[in-house]
Image (cartoon, rainbow over all chains, first blue to last red; front, side, top):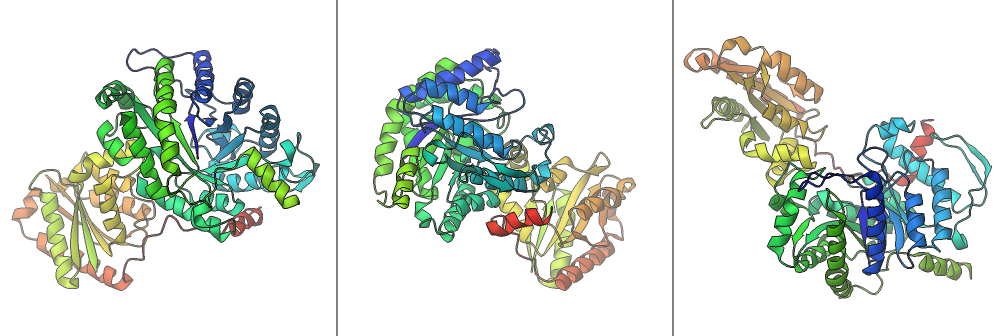
Length: 361
Length: 196
Protein backbone atom coordinates (compact mmCIF):
# COMPACT_ATOMS: atom_id res chain seq x y z
CA UNK A 1 0.00 0.00 0.00
CA UNK A 2 1.20 3.51 -0.81
CA UNK A 3 1.12 6.45 1.59
CA UNK A 4 1.64 10.03 0.66
CA UNK A 5 0.52 13.61 0.86
CA UNK A 6 -1.47 15.86 -1.45
CA UNK A 7 -1.33 19.61 -1.47
CA UNK A 8 -3.92 22.10 -2.62
CA UNK A 9 -1.27 24.82 -2.78
CA UNK A 10 -3.38 27.50 -1.12
CA UNK A 11 -1.85 30.77 0.05
CA UNK A 12 -3.80 31.37 3.23
CA UNK A 13 -3.05 33.80 6.06
CA UNK A 14 -1.95 32.12 9.28
CA UNK A 15 -4.97 32.92 11.47
CA UNK A 16 -2.83 32.95 14.62
CA UNK A 17 -0.67 35.89 13.49
CA UNK A 18 -2.34 37.19 10.31
CA UNK A 19 0.80 36.63 8.23
CA UNK A 20 0.31 35.60 4.59
CA UNK A 21 3.23 33.90 2.84
CA UNK A 22 4.30 35.29 -0.51
CA UNK A 23 3.76 33.15 -3.59
CA UNK A 24 7.50 32.55 -3.70
CA UNK A 25 7.50 31.34 -0.08
CA UNK A 26 4.52 29.08 -0.67
CA UNK A 27 5.99 27.52 -3.81
CA UNK A 28 9.30 26.85 -2.05
CA UNK A 29 7.37 25.51 0.95
CA UNK A 30 5.55 23.03 -1.29
CA UNK A 31 8.90 21.83 -2.58
CA UNK A 32 10.32 21.56 0.96
CA UNK A 33 7.25 19.54 1.93
CA UNK A 34 7.70 17.22 -1.05
CA UNK A 35 11.37 16.63 -0.19
CA UNK A 36 10.41 16.00 3.42
CA UNK A 37 7.88 13.42 2.27
CA UNK A 38 10.66 11.37 0.73
CA UNK A 39 12.93 11.91 3.75
CA UNK A 40 10.35 10.54 6.19
CA UNK A 41 9.62 7.50 4.04
CA UNK A 42 6.38 8.42 2.32
CA UNK A 43 5.71 7.07 -1.16
CA UNK A 44 3.79 9.81 -2.97
CA UNK A 45 3.68 13.59 -3.32
CA UNK A 46 0.76 15.02 -5.29
CA UNK A 47 0.12 18.64 -6.16
CA UNK A 48 -3.15 20.27 -7.08
CA UNK A 49 -3.67 22.39 -10.18
CA UNK A 50 -5.33 25.78 -9.92
CA UNK A 51 -5.63 28.82 -12.11
CA UNK A 52 -6.80 31.45 -9.67
CA UNK A 53 -5.63 33.08 -6.45
CA UNK A 54 -5.13 32.21 -3.64
CA UNK A 55 -3.55 29.09 -5.15
CA UNK A 56 -0.02 28.83 -6.58
CA UNK A 57 0.29 25.51 -8.44
CA UNK A 58 -0.81 26.35 -11.98
CA UNK A 59 2.04 24.42 -13.56
CA UNK A 60 2.30 21.00 -11.92
CA UNK A 61 4.85 19.36 -14.23
CA UNK A 62 7.26 22.27 -13.71
CA UNK A 63 7.10 21.79 -9.96
CA UNK A 64 7.16 17.99 -10.12
CA UNK A 65 10.12 18.06 -12.54
CA UNK A 66 12.07 20.10 -10.02
CA UNK A 67 11.10 17.76 -7.19
CA UNK A 68 12.02 14.77 -9.37
CA UNK A 69 15.55 16.11 -9.74
CA UNK A 70 15.94 16.35 -5.99
CA UNK A 71 14.45 13.01 -4.97
CA UNK A 72 15.26 9.37 -5.58
CA UNK A 73 12.26 7.32 -4.68
CA UNK A 74 9.18 9.51 -4.32
CA UNK A 75 6.30 8.99 -6.78
CA UNK A 76 5.19 12.33 -8.22
CA UNK A 77 1.52 12.75 -8.83
CA UNK A 78 -1.29 15.28 -9.11
CA UNK A 79 -4.48 15.99 -7.23
CA UNK A 80 -5.84 16.74 -9.69
CA UNK A 81 -4.85 17.39 -13.32
CA UNK A 82 -7.68 19.26 -15.03
CA UNK A 83 -8.76 16.97 -17.85
CA UNK A 84 -11.57 19.37 -18.73
CA UNK A 85 -9.75 22.63 -19.41
CA UNK A 86 -6.26 21.42 -20.34
CA UNK A 87 -5.56 20.25 -23.85
CA UNK A 88 -5.18 16.47 -23.62
CA UNK A 89 -2.36 16.69 -26.17
CA UNK A 90 -0.37 18.94 -23.85
CA UNK A 91 -1.08 16.66 -20.87
CA UNK A 92 0.21 13.70 -22.90
CA UNK A 93 3.41 15.57 -23.77
CA UNK A 94 4.06 17.18 -20.38
CA UNK A 95 3.63 14.03 -18.34
CA UNK A 96 5.55 11.83 -20.76
CA UNK A 97 8.43 14.32 -20.51
CA UNK A 98 8.18 14.27 -16.72
CA UNK A 99 8.10 10.49 -16.78
CA UNK A 100 11.46 10.36 -18.64
CA UNK A 101 13.07 12.93 -16.34
CA UNK A 102 11.79 11.15 -13.21
CA UNK A 103 12.73 7.66 -14.44
CA UNK A 104 9.11 6.58 -14.33
CA UNK A 105 8.25 7.87 -10.86
CA UNK A 106 5.11 9.54 -12.19
CA UNK A 107 1.39 8.98 -12.16
CA UNK A 108 -1.47 11.44 -12.28
CA UNK A 109 -5.01 11.93 -11.15
CA UNK A 110 -7.65 13.31 -13.47
CA UNK A 111 -10.18 15.77 -12.11
CA UNK A 112 -12.70 18.20 -13.54
CA UNK A 113 -12.05 21.20 -11.31
CA UNK A 114 -14.74 22.96 -9.35
CA UNK A 115 -13.94 26.61 -10.04
CA UNK A 116 -16.61 27.82 -12.46
CA UNK A 117 -14.73 30.67 -14.19
CA UNK A 118 -11.73 28.46 -15.06
CA UNK A 119 -13.80 26.86 -17.81
CA UNK A 120 -14.52 30.09 -19.71
CA UNK A 121 -10.99 31.37 -19.01
CA UNK A 122 -9.75 28.36 -20.93
CA UNK A 123 -12.43 28.61 -23.57
CA UNK A 124 -14.62 25.79 -22.27
CA UNK A 125 -18.22 25.41 -21.09
CA UNK A 126 -18.69 24.14 -17.53
CA UNK A 127 -21.98 22.49 -18.49
CA UNK A 128 -19.91 20.14 -20.63
CA UNK A 129 -17.65 19.24 -17.67
CA UNK A 130 -18.36 15.51 -17.67
CA UNK A 131 -18.27 15.23 -21.46
CA UNK A 132 -14.99 17.14 -21.61
CA UNK A 133 -13.52 14.73 -19.05
CA UNK A 134 -14.70 11.70 -21.02
CA UNK A 135 -13.68 12.83 -24.49
CA UNK A 136 -10.38 14.45 -23.50
CA UNK A 137 -9.27 11.44 -21.52
CA UNK A 138 -10.26 9.10 -24.31
CA UNK A 139 -7.88 11.03 -26.57
CA UNK A 140 -5.12 11.19 -23.92
CA UNK A 141 -5.38 7.42 -23.45
CA UNK A 142 -4.84 6.88 -27.17
CA UNK A 143 -2.00 9.41 -27.46
CA UNK A 144 0.05 7.39 -24.98
CA UNK A 145 -0.74 4.04 -26.58
CA UNK A 146 -0.81 4.66 -30.33
CA UNK A 147 2.28 6.04 -32.05
CA UNK A 148 0.25 7.80 -34.74
CA UNK A 149 -3.19 9.09 -33.89
CA UNK A 150 -5.95 10.16 -36.22
CA UNK A 151 -8.71 11.62 -34.12
CA UNK A 152 -11.81 13.73 -34.36
CA UNK A 153 -14.04 14.82 -31.50
CA UNK A 154 -16.38 17.50 -30.30
CA UNK A 155 -14.16 19.69 -28.16
CA UNK A 156 -10.81 19.98 -29.92
CA UNK A 157 -9.45 20.43 -33.42
CA UNK A 158 -9.01 17.09 -35.20
CA UNK A 159 -5.64 15.38 -35.33
CA UNK A 160 -4.31 13.74 -38.47
CA UNK A 161 -1.09 11.76 -38.32
CA UNK A 162 -0.17 13.15 -34.91
CA UNK A 163 2.52 11.60 -32.73
CA UNK A 164 2.75 12.81 -29.14
CA UNK A 165 6.39 13.14 -28.11
CA UNK A 166 8.26 11.99 -26.18
CA UNK A 167 6.68 8.56 -26.29
CA UNK A 168 5.97 7.20 -22.77
CA UNK A 169 9.06 5.84 -21.02
CA UNK A 170 9.63 2.18 -21.98
CA UNK A 171 6.35 2.34 -23.89
CA UNK A 172 4.51 2.31 -20.55
CA UNK A 173 1.98 5.14 -20.10
CA UNK A 174 1.82 6.72 -16.64
CA UNK A 175 -0.79 5.10 -14.40
CA UNK A 176 -3.93 7.21 -14.15
CA UNK A 177 -6.30 7.75 -11.26
CA UNK A 178 -9.66 9.41 -11.73
CA UNK A 179 -10.79 11.57 -8.85
CA UNK A 180 -14.41 12.36 -8.21
CA UNK A 181 -16.49 13.03 -5.14
CA UNK A 182 -20.01 12.66 -6.48
CA UNK A 183 -20.09 11.83 -10.17
CA UNK A 184 -20.87 8.19 -10.96
CA UNK A 185 -19.84 8.88 -14.58
CA UNK A 186 -16.24 9.27 -13.41
CA UNK A 187 -16.28 6.07 -11.33
CA UNK A 188 -17.65 4.37 -14.45
CA UNK A 189 -14.90 5.90 -16.59
CA UNK A 190 -12.16 4.70 -14.22
CA UNK A 191 -13.71 1.23 -14.18
CA UNK A 192 -13.99 1.08 -17.98
CA UNK A 193 -10.29 1.71 -18.50
CA UNK A 194 -9.16 -0.34 -15.51
CA UNK A 195 -7.62 2.84 -14.09
CA UNK A 196 -7.52 3.80 -10.42
CA UNK A 197 -10.35 5.59 -8.65
CA UNK A 198 -9.56 8.15 -5.98
CA UNK A 199 -12.26 9.42 -3.65
CA UNK A 200 -11.26 12.59 -1.91
CA UNK A 201 -13.44 11.81 1.04
CA UNK A 202 -12.05 14.50 3.34
CA UNK A 203 -15.18 16.63 3.35
CA UNK A 204 -17.66 13.79 3.02
CA UNK A 205 -19.39 11.32 5.30
CA UNK A 206 -18.29 7.69 5.07
CA UNK A 207 -21.54 6.29 3.64
CA UNK A 208 -21.20 8.46 0.54
CA UNK A 209 -17.59 7.38 -0.04
CA UNK A 210 -18.64 3.77 0.44
CA UNK A 211 -21.26 3.96 -2.30
CA UNK A 212 -18.95 5.63 -4.81
CA UNK A 213 -16.17 3.10 -4.17
CA UNK A 214 -18.59 0.18 -4.37
CA UNK A 215 -19.91 1.45 -7.68
CA UNK A 216 -16.37 1.69 -9.08
CA UNK A 217 -15.44 -1.78 -7.80
CA UNK A 218 -18.56 -3.37 -9.29
CA UNK A 219 -18.05 -1.77 -12.67
CA UNK A 220 -14.30 -2.58 -12.64
CA UNK A 221 -15.24 -6.23 -12.40
CA UNK A 222 -17.99 -5.77 -15.01
CA UNK A 223 -15.36 -4.62 -17.52
CA UNK A 224 -13.26 -7.70 -16.84
CA UNK A 225 -10.24 -6.14 -15.15
CA UNK A 226 -10.44 -8.42 -12.11
CA UNK A 227 -12.64 -8.99 -9.11
CA UNK A 228 -14.25 -6.01 -7.36
CA UNK A 229 -11.73 -6.49 -4.56
CA UNK A 230 -8.86 -6.09 -7.03
CA UNK A 231 -9.90 -2.63 -8.23
CA UNK A 232 -7.41 0.16 -7.50
CA UNK A 233 -8.75 2.54 -4.88
CA UNK A 234 -7.24 5.64 -3.32
CA UNK A 235 -8.60 7.76 -0.49
CA UNK A 236 -7.90 11.15 1.01
CA UNK A 237 -7.34 11.92 4.63
CA UNK A 238 -6.72 14.96 6.72
CA UNK A 239 -4.89 14.95 10.04
CA UNK A 240 -3.25 17.14 12.63
CA UNK A 241 -1.25 15.46 15.36
CA UNK A 242 0.58 16.10 18.57
CA UNK A 243 1.77 13.51 21.05
CA UNK A 244 -0.92 14.70 23.43
CA UNK A 245 -4.28 14.83 21.68
CA UNK A 246 -5.57 17.90 23.54
CA UNK A 247 -2.48 19.83 22.37
CA UNK A 248 -3.36 18.90 18.80
CA UNK A 249 -6.93 20.15 19.22
CA UNK A 250 -5.86 23.42 20.83
CA UNK A 251 -3.21 24.14 18.23
CA UNK A 252 -5.30 23.19 15.21
CA UNK A 253 -8.60 24.82 16.23
CA UNK A 254 -7.84 28.36 14.94
CA UNK A 255 -6.74 26.88 11.61
CA UNK A 256 -9.88 24.76 11.43
CA UNK A 257 -12.20 27.59 12.42
CA UNK A 258 -10.80 29.88 9.71
CA UNK A 259 -9.98 27.30 7.05
CA UNK A 260 -11.10 27.91 3.50
CA UNK A 261 -13.84 25.41 2.53
CA UNK A 262 -15.16 24.43 5.96
CA UNK A 263 -14.18 27.31 8.24
CA UNK A 264 -16.94 29.24 10.00
CA UNK A 265 -19.17 26.21 9.65
CA UNK A 266 -19.53 23.19 11.91
CA UNK A 267 -17.45 22.74 15.02
CA UNK A 268 -14.16 20.86 14.90
CA UNK A 269 -15.81 18.16 17.00
CA UNK A 270 -18.79 17.72 14.63
CA UNK A 271 -16.56 17.74 11.58
CA UNK A 272 -14.19 15.13 12.96
CA UNK A 273 -17.17 12.95 13.88
CA UNK A 274 -18.67 13.16 10.36
CA UNK A 275 -15.62 13.19 8.07
CA UNK A 276 -12.15 11.58 7.96
CA UNK A 277 -10.52 14.63 9.62
CA UNK A 278 -8.58 13.49 12.68
CA UNK A 279 -7.10 15.93 15.16
CA UNK A 280 -5.36 14.15 18.00
CA UNK A 281 -2.55 11.78 18.84
CA UNK A 282 -0.74 9.62 16.28
CA UNK A 283 -2.60 6.65 17.76
CA UNK A 284 -5.96 8.29 17.01
CA UNK A 285 -4.85 8.97 13.45
CA UNK A 286 -3.84 5.33 13.07
CA UNK A 287 -7.20 4.09 14.36
CA UNK A 288 -9.25 6.43 12.18
CA UNK A 289 -7.23 5.68 9.04
CA UNK A 290 -7.50 1.93 9.59
CA UNK A 291 -11.27 2.34 9.83
CA UNK A 292 -11.40 3.56 6.19
CA UNK A 293 -10.91 -0.06 5.16
CA UNK A 294 -14.25 -0.94 6.74
CA UNK A 295 -16.11 1.02 4.06
CA UNK A 296 -13.64 1.18 1.16
CA UNK A 297 -12.28 -2.37 1.34
CA UNK A 298 -8.56 -3.15 1.01
CA UNK A 299 -7.22 -0.19 -0.90
CA UNK A 300 -3.99 0.90 -2.56
CA UNK A 301 -3.22 4.52 -1.85
CA UNK A 302 -3.76 6.80 1.11
CA UNK A 303 -2.99 10.50 0.66
CA UNK A 304 -3.09 12.98 3.51
CA UNK A 305 -3.74 16.71 3.27
CA UNK A 306 -1.19 18.27 5.63
CA UNK A 307 -0.31 21.79 4.45
CA UNK A 308 -3.35 23.99 4.16
CA UNK A 309 -5.36 26.63 6.00
CA UNK A 310 -2.30 28.76 6.73
CA UNK A 311 -0.32 26.20 8.76
CA UNK A 312 3.30 27.39 8.88
CA UNK A 313 5.94 25.36 7.06
CA UNK A 314 7.73 24.49 10.29
CA UNK A 315 4.55 22.97 11.71
CA UNK A 316 3.86 21.04 8.51
CA UNK A 317 7.36 19.57 8.56
CA UNK A 318 6.85 18.50 12.19
CA UNK A 319 3.58 16.89 11.14
CA UNK A 320 5.38 14.99 8.40
CA UNK A 321 7.95 13.72 10.92
CA UNK A 322 5.12 12.36 13.04
CA UNK A 323 3.37 10.91 10.00
CA UNK A 324 6.52 9.20 8.71
CA UNK A 325 7.89 8.03 12.02
CA UNK A 326 4.88 7.11 14.10
CA UNK A 327 1.87 6.67 11.86
CA UNK A 328 2.76 5.23 8.47
CA UNK A 329 4.97 2.36 9.70
CA UNK A 330 2.10 1.12 11.87
CA UNK A 331 -0.41 1.62 9.05
CA UNK A 332 1.78 -0.37 6.66
CA UNK A 333 1.92 -3.23 9.11
CA UNK A 334 -1.75 -3.16 10.06
CA UNK A 335 -3.12 -2.74 6.53
CA UNK A 336 -1.01 -5.73 5.44
CA UNK A 337 -2.73 -7.95 8.00
CA UNK A 338 -5.59 -10.04 6.58
CA UNK A 339 -5.09 -8.46 3.20
CA UNK A 340 -5.94 -11.12 0.61
CA UNK A 341 -2.91 -12.12 -1.46
CA UNK A 342 -4.73 -11.41 -4.72
CA UNK A 343 -5.41 -7.76 -3.87
CA UNK A 344 -2.77 -5.92 -5.93
CA UNK A 345 -0.62 -2.98 -4.91
CA UNK A 346 -1.04 0.31 -6.75
CA UNK A 347 0.57 -0.01 -10.19
CA UNK A 348 3.99 1.61 -10.58
CA UNK A 349 6.14 2.13 -13.63
CA UNK A 350 8.09 -1.02 -12.75
CA UNK A 351 5.01 -3.18 -12.24
CA UNK A 352 3.37 -1.93 -15.44
CA UNK A 353 6.58 -2.51 -17.36
CA UNK A 354 6.80 -6.07 -16.05
CA UNK A 355 3.16 -6.71 -16.90
CA UNK A 356 3.74 -5.42 -20.42
CA UNK A 357 6.77 -7.69 -20.89
CA UNK A 358 4.82 -10.70 -19.68
CA UNK A 359 1.99 -9.89 -22.11
CA UNK A 360 4.38 -9.37 -25.01
CA UNK A 361 6.10 -12.72 -24.39
CA UNK B 1 -49.81 6.86 1.35
CA UNK B 2 -47.45 9.15 3.18
CA UNK B 3 -47.74 12.91 3.51
CA UNK B 4 -45.00 15.07 4.96
CA UNK B 5 -45.53 18.46 6.60
CA UNK B 6 -42.63 20.90 6.34
CA UNK B 7 -43.08 23.60 8.94
CA UNK B 8 -40.84 26.65 9.20
CA UNK B 9 -42.49 28.00 12.34
CA UNK B 10 -40.01 29.23 14.92
CA UNK B 11 -41.90 29.73 18.17
CA UNK B 12 -43.10 26.89 20.36
CA UNK B 13 -46.03 26.48 20.10
CA UNK B 14 -46.21 27.90 16.61
CA UNK B 15 -49.24 28.95 14.59
CA UNK B 16 -47.36 27.83 11.46
CA UNK B 17 -47.08 24.33 12.90
CA UNK B 18 -50.72 24.51 14.02
CA UNK B 19 -51.82 25.32 10.45
CA UNK B 20 -49.66 22.47 9.15
CA UNK B 21 -51.24 20.06 11.62
CA UNK B 22 -54.77 21.15 10.69
CA UNK B 23 -54.06 20.67 6.99
CA UNK B 24 -52.43 17.30 7.65
CA UNK B 25 -55.35 16.09 9.74
CA UNK B 26 -57.83 17.12 7.04
CA UNK B 27 -55.81 15.39 4.32
CA UNK B 28 -55.30 12.27 6.45
CA UNK B 29 -59.05 12.07 7.15
CA UNK B 30 -59.66 11.79 3.40
CA UNK B 31 -56.78 9.49 2.47
CA UNK B 32 -55.80 7.56 5.59
CA UNK B 33 -52.26 8.75 4.88
CA UNK B 34 -49.47 8.52 7.43
CA UNK B 35 -48.22 11.93 8.44
CA UNK B 36 -44.65 12.90 9.23
CA UNK B 37 -43.71 16.41 10.33
CA UNK B 38 -40.38 18.02 9.52
CA UNK B 39 -39.72 20.96 11.85
CA UNK B 40 -37.13 23.17 10.19
CA UNK B 41 -36.32 24.90 13.47
CA UNK B 42 -34.67 21.67 14.66
CA UNK B 43 -32.64 21.50 11.45
CA UNK B 44 -31.59 25.17 11.27
CA UNK B 45 -27.95 24.57 12.22
CA UNK B 46 -27.53 21.54 9.96
CA UNK B 47 -29.07 23.49 7.08
CA UNK B 48 -26.54 26.29 7.64
CA UNK B 49 -23.72 23.74 7.78
CA UNK B 50 -24.95 22.16 4.56
CA UNK B 51 -24.24 25.53 2.92
CA UNK B 52 -20.73 25.73 4.37
CA UNK B 53 -19.67 22.04 4.06
CA UNK B 54 -21.63 20.84 1.07
CA UNK B 55 -23.20 17.82 2.73
CA UNK B 56 -26.22 17.19 4.96
CA UNK B 57 -25.87 16.18 8.58
CA UNK B 58 -27.66 13.11 9.91
CA UNK B 59 -30.98 14.73 10.89
CA UNK B 60 -31.17 16.89 7.78
CA UNK B 61 -30.41 13.91 5.53
CA UNK B 62 -33.28 11.99 7.18
CA UNK B 63 -35.65 14.93 6.61
CA UNK B 64 -34.55 15.22 2.98
CA UNK B 65 -35.21 11.52 2.50
CA UNK B 66 -38.68 11.82 4.05
CA UNK B 67 -39.58 14.75 1.79
CA UNK B 68 -38.19 13.10 -1.32
CA UNK B 69 -40.08 9.86 -0.67
CA UNK B 70 -43.39 11.48 0.34
CA UNK B 71 -46.49 11.06 -1.81
CA UNK B 72 -47.43 14.65 -1.09
CA UNK B 73 -46.18 17.64 0.88
CA UNK B 74 -47.80 20.30 3.02
CA UNK B 75 -45.37 23.20 3.30
CA UNK B 76 -46.01 26.03 5.74
CA UNK B 77 -43.96 29.14 6.38
CA UNK B 78 -44.40 32.29 8.41
CA UNK B 79 -44.24 35.46 6.33
CA UNK B 80 -40.96 37.31 6.87
CA UNK B 81 -40.28 40.56 5.01
CA UNK B 82 -43.11 39.96 2.54
CA UNK B 83 -41.96 36.46 1.59
CA UNK B 84 -41.24 32.96 2.91
CA UNK B 85 -38.70 32.86 5.71
CA UNK B 86 -35.02 32.41 4.87
CA UNK B 87 -34.97 29.12 6.76
CA UNK B 88 -37.88 27.80 4.68
CA UNK B 89 -36.14 28.73 1.41
CA UNK B 90 -32.81 27.38 2.65
CA UNK B 91 -34.27 23.92 3.27
CA UNK B 92 -35.40 23.73 -0.35
CA UNK B 93 -32.09 25.21 -1.55
CA UNK B 94 -30.14 22.25 -0.16
CA UNK B 95 -32.57 19.61 -1.44
CA UNK B 96 -31.54 17.70 -4.58
CA UNK B 97 -32.82 19.66 -7.59
CA UNK B 98 -35.33 17.06 -8.82
CA UNK B 99 -36.57 15.90 -5.43
CA UNK B 100 -39.99 17.53 -5.80
CA UNK B 101 -40.56 16.94 -9.51
CA UNK B 102 -44.14 15.76 -10.07
CA UNK B 103 -44.97 15.79 -6.37
CA UNK B 104 -48.26 17.30 -5.12
CA UNK B 105 -47.55 20.21 -2.79
CA UNK B 106 -50.03 22.17 -0.70
CA UNK B 107 -48.67 25.66 0.04
CA UNK B 108 -49.62 27.51 3.21
CA UNK B 109 -48.42 30.50 5.18
CA UNK B 110 -49.11 32.39 8.37
CA UNK B 111 -48.74 36.06 9.21
CA UNK B 112 -49.76 38.77 11.62
CA UNK B 113 -52.04 40.40 9.10
CA UNK B 114 -54.14 39.38 6.12
CA UNK B 115 -52.34 42.03 4.03
CA UNK B 116 -49.65 39.43 3.23
CA UNK B 117 -51.96 36.70 2.00
CA UNK B 118 -50.82 36.99 -1.62
CA UNK B 119 -47.39 35.79 -0.52
CA UNK B 120 -48.74 32.36 -1.47
CA UNK B 121 -49.15 33.48 -5.07
CA UNK B 122 -46.13 35.73 -5.54
CA UNK B 123 -43.54 33.80 -3.51
CA UNK B 124 -44.48 30.19 -2.70
CA UNK B 125 -46.24 29.19 -5.90
CA UNK B 126 -43.39 30.31 -8.22
CA UNK B 127 -40.82 28.59 -5.99
CA UNK B 128 -42.61 25.25 -6.18
CA UNK B 129 -43.42 25.71 -9.85
CA UNK B 130 -39.67 26.12 -10.42
CA UNK B 131 -39.05 22.92 -8.45
CA UNK B 132 -41.48 21.18 -10.85
CA UNK B 133 -43.93 20.30 -8.09
CA UNK B 134 -47.66 20.00 -8.77
CA UNK B 135 -48.96 22.84 -6.61
CA UNK B 136 -52.58 22.42 -5.48
CA UNK B 137 -54.86 25.24 -6.67
CA UNK B 138 -55.92 26.37 -3.20
CA UNK B 139 -53.23 27.75 -0.93
CA UNK B 140 -54.08 28.47 2.69
CA UNK B 141 -53.09 31.65 4.44
CA UNK B 142 -53.88 32.20 8.10
CA UNK B 143 -53.50 35.65 9.66
CA UNK B 144 -53.72 35.96 13.43
CA UNK B 145 -57.34 37.10 13.13
CA UNK B 146 -58.30 33.98 11.15
CA UNK B 147 -57.82 31.81 14.22
CA UNK B 148 -60.85 33.52 15.75
CA UNK B 149 -62.96 33.94 12.65
CA UNK B 150 -65.06 31.83 10.34
CA UNK B 151 -63.74 30.67 6.98
CA UNK B 152 -60.35 29.09 7.78
CA UNK B 153 -61.92 25.66 8.20
CA UNK B 154 -63.51 25.82 4.76
CA UNK B 155 -60.22 26.79 3.12
CA UNK B 156 -58.38 24.01 4.94
CA UNK B 157 -60.95 21.44 3.83
CA UNK B 158 -60.90 22.60 0.23
CA UNK B 159 -57.09 22.63 0.04
CA UNK B 160 -56.78 19.26 1.79
CA UNK B 161 -59.37 17.80 -0.58
CA UNK B 162 -57.39 19.01 -3.57
CA UNK B 163 -54.15 17.61 -2.16
CA UNK B 164 -55.81 14.26 -1.42
CA UNK B 165 -57.26 14.06 -4.91
CA UNK B 166 -53.93 14.89 -6.53
CA UNK B 167 -51.91 12.52 -4.36
CA UNK B 168 -54.38 9.69 -5.02
CA UNK B 169 -54.66 10.52 -8.71
CA UNK B 170 -50.92 10.75 -9.27
CA UNK B 171 -50.31 7.51 -7.39
CA UNK B 172 -47.37 6.64 -5.17
CA UNK B 173 -44.28 8.82 -5.29
CA UNK B 174 -41.87 7.54 -7.90
CA UNK B 175 -38.77 6.18 -6.18
CA UNK B 176 -36.22 8.91 -5.58
CA UNK B 177 -33.71 8.99 -8.39
CA UNK B 178 -30.64 7.06 -7.38
CA UNK B 179 -27.63 9.34 -7.70
CA UNK B 180 -25.46 6.35 -8.33
CA UNK B 181 -27.13 5.13 -11.51
CA UNK B 182 -24.60 4.72 -14.30
CA UNK B 183 -24.89 4.99 -18.04
CA UNK B 184 -22.48 2.42 -19.51
CA UNK B 185 -19.27 4.14 -20.60
CA UNK B 186 -19.50 3.31 -24.29
CA UNK B 187 -23.00 4.84 -24.49
CA UNK B 188 -21.89 7.93 -22.64
CA UNK B 189 -18.94 8.47 -24.97
CA UNK B 190 -20.99 7.74 -28.08
CA UNK B 191 -23.55 10.33 -27.00
CA UNK B 192 -20.87 13.05 -27.15
CA UNK B 193 -20.03 12.39 -30.77
CA UNK B 194 -23.70 12.08 -31.72
CA UNK B 195 -24.26 15.55 -30.27
CA UNK B 196 -21.59 17.01 -32.51
